[in-house]
Amino acid sequence: GQSLEQPSEVTAVEGAIVQINCTYQTSGFYGLSWYQQHDGGAPTFLSYNALDGLEETGRFSSFLSRSDSYGYLLLQELQMKDSASYFCAVSFPGSYQLTFGKGTKLSVIP
Amino acid sequence: DVKVTQSSRYLVKRTGEKVFLECVQDMDHENMFWYRQDPGLGLRLIYFSYDVKMKEKGDIPEGYSVSREKKERFSLILESASTNQTSMYLCASTGERSAKNQPQHFGDGTRLSIL
Image 1 (cartoon, helix red, strand yellow):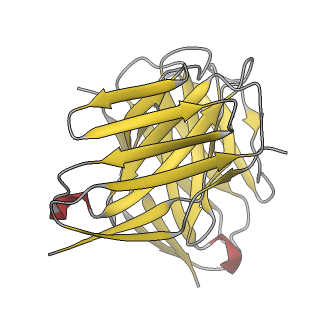
Image 2 (tube, chains in turn orange, brown):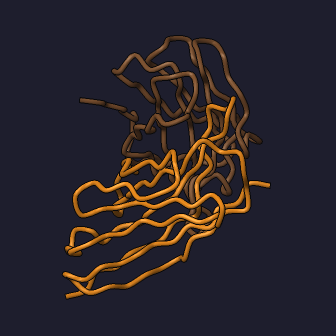
């Protein structure tokens, strides 16, 4: 089946760097996406990795390694506003769907 | 800017009622989706639609139906609401026929309580 595994919770200090991992038990997908969701808010798109390697967007970077069945989201210079849930997701050829992981709740502390 | 609007932020209904959740997007997107989000379970796809009057079941369609009469509007229907359908419901849309690398745009969600 299609399964994406993420840690349920992560805590990090303001100004630090944090890495949120996503491991998967599936293959043949187009790429790995990341979404951010603040409490009570809508999920918003952060990044997409179609190919292996690192994609950087400001303070956020995302990485994919298909050979290792592994990806991660890296947040640098953490700010209090980064406290949110982060979801990884994949899409498959011929499908309109995204399959989401269960999400990682990031708490940034002073 | 992209806009997906869900008709209600909070809704309280009674067991057995027929419930309608409405979603409208203003981006001329072909694909629209309904998810429910529960603590510890993430986002689970209920139904999606890739064109007007077209619909496909997602992972958890039981107890739900949908309607897509116009391109911009996608409705989720709980035929006979039950307490286990108390949840956050999220609508989303994308603009191409494949979700290949198209981000999904989400509404703010409807928190539905069934009493």
